[in-house]
Image (cartoon, rainbow, N blue to C red; front, side):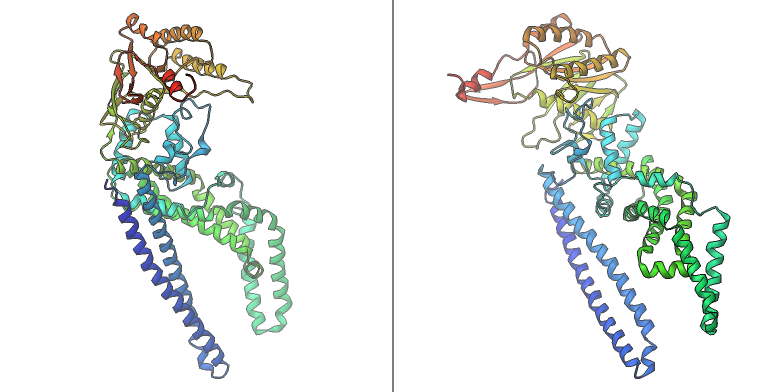
Length: 589
């Protein structure tokens, strides 16, 4: 993609925002002018009565201008967010993607691979991918990157959806711009789900249905009688106070309900707007057509519950609360309407939001595809093997990235990588792991060609000790290896990435343990890459030539300078750099 593409879009939306800002100023001035005319006519009306006659029309015009200005202000906010998004995208195209949420809340040092592969946190894969419009979408994206539960059929279907969404930049960015109006960094939907399961306070109870309609009708009739017969005041007063007393009797549960739901009004309103965007595109992929059908059904109903929550929030206005309840039992109607919506549509709401989260998460992969159209979509193969051409880590800038070809499982199922410090062993392990995650999600991979199976992914690269769990580093590593072996013995196919195993013991013990572990791994249905400094393990290739292959990353010392080409080569590493670096840094003579 043209590096200036996003800057051009940012400039375009900035121009649009400026145009809308001018319109907003015109509406503001018009409102002020109309307000002054209204005040003038009211003043003159006390002298000449006919000046009162146009006042109602002028008031209607005033509120119409308020409405139009509000719409334009919302439009202005959207344009400004689009400016921001495209500026961020331009920076991300230069690998400065730290403006986007990093998903640090999903970090789990004990996860089977996400911590080792830097999936979450500052500068992570999640931060690089994340273009979700909603918090629900972010939650789903995190789940997709850590669960890997998709079948081959669903991966293929997701590929179709990602390709399709990748071409719809206006749709994707509009979703993001609307979603970011929700300041929901700490929100969760637990209170909403809890309310959906609660019994009704008023709806469906005959006595309340009669009271909330009959009593206000009688009170309003009494008010009309009072207007013509002042002697009817006691009757009207009694009915008015009776309704206020009835509302006061249920004030506590109604206020509790209002507080529980009030935080969801803006969230649900924006969700309905995002659902509404789904109506326009002519989707052809099965995944997106299914989500579009759900969105079309959900739009109006989600907007309706947002309006009902807004209505119950209005009871906090003292004037509305006094006369609304005194004349119409306003609180009863608000709660009954909410409970009626819950009865009719409440069971469908979780499914609607789950659908939104699913395609919202796909928007991130689609933007990745749009930004890197030359990246290949992976092929899911029934054969238990991984094969890649020109494979690189997607988070390394193109100018610095070195791509490698590799294969595993045809026939050797265990790759032993040796090499000096900083030669690229750990980066290669993460490259394989991250691209496998992407391929298993139906997303493009940083490669010209990629083939992999569907299997469990397990890593052992960054195992940490835990004082809280009274667990040493070495014991934590053994626990990780034990879990991997248990899964293999249970018959699960597993892809395993290990970096310098058994670091917490002496070199002899480490070598013996590593040999025995490797012998165990090649007897199971596994694809294994082990990075190690221990070149003595290389003789295992001669003992098990059909199962183990030796590869390496080499450094090169020339004219007192250490360099690396980061190219994966066959065979064992022959060079070391620790002594050279210690001498160069003056640590040893």
